[in-house]
Amino acid sequence: MKNLLRSASEHRPVACTPSGDFLRWARSSGLQTRWAHRLKVHVPMCALAYAFLTSPVLAQAYSDFARANQEYAQGHFKDAIAGYEGLVRTGQATANVFYDLGNAYFRTGDFGGAI
Image (cartoon, rainbow, N blue to C red; front, side):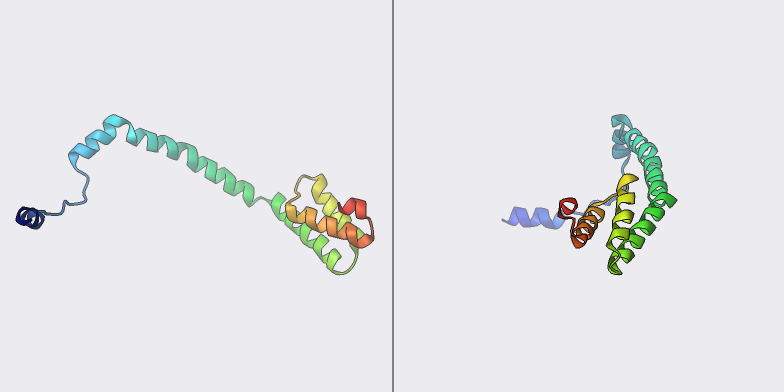
């Protein structure tokens, strides 16, 4: 027990700076080149995703969806169906669009369309 306590008191924390051995290992193992490759691939992909997600096409789809929801709220279910169907035709439909489309069909009495 005394030896254990003595060795614990003699223990000094190691500084958290990269040593030459680690840097040498990182270079030789290809660690730096793998990270550089990942950055070269992922940064442009993120930029393209950002450009796509903020595109005017999505803004237009959101505007059409909001307009169809407004028609639905005012009780103009046939106009709302036309708006929702337009989103489906252009390939911009989400689960919310299909849900609201089914509800609009239900409100008009078209139970087959609602399903």
